[in-house]
Image 1 (cartoon, rainbow, N blue to C red):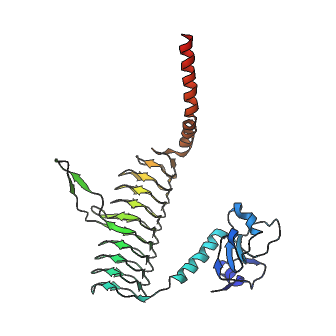
Image 2 (image 1 turned 120 degrees about the vertical axis):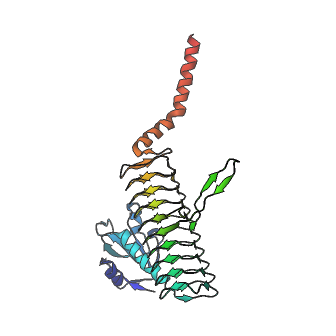
Image 3 (image 1 turned 90 degrees about the vertical axis):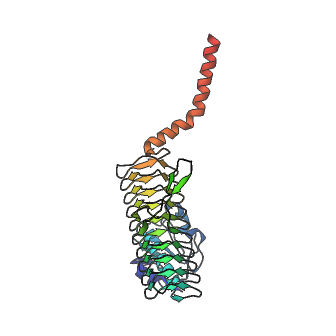
Length: 343
């Protein structure tokens, strides 16, 4: 599909500098632009490409100053990054406009299906499952007994949702994610063996949650593992039994949240963060990459780094000292030699 600059500016409530009739039919990074492509500039590091790009249209901030003439048509907006994201969202929603049922699929007679849904081939929907309106279920998805899925949710190929789990509206769950597998519950026995503890709870995922590929969210031993509305989980994340993650928290790839942790609202975890079990993390906490957290963080809006985790500034100071240790060791060795030679 082709769109004129005037149409895009109208959608974004932006202003045009250049040809309002120029058309685009694709997206491109500003440094890789070509005729017919739409790009954006938000990061000052890429400003030089604004004057070099071959893209037909570039979205920029209203505050962006021009040091020289540009060849493309500009659309000025309040926030170029957010505006470009809005366009991508619109484009993606059009790409996902599927409905109907592919074959073969298996849908239990007791399952309830909403209107205008899409069910991809080799999908299995078990007894008493409830699927809301406009849900998109891509091929090879498993939906267990008594599962409830809210409207406008998208399940990509290979998603597995175990029995009794509840998925809200406007969620996106990417390929290979497993929702509701057993929590890691085993009781040690006197003969050094382990007895499995039945996991009889479920997983509750509220509205507007996105879950990355191959992420696993375990069912609760009792009660619910809860992912609150607006949470964004990256690929390859482990969320253990009875965890609760607060609204609008974002967690990057390869992080692991141990059982019964309570994570607050608006937190941000970088990649490979690990939380020990039964911890409480206050609202707004930011944790740096590869940090290991073994005690609760009770101060809201804290910035934590390191393993074991500590205040960000303290960790940076410690790291400076650690980097100097080889030199300090040489100096200590030299002092020891001097002392011995003078004895």
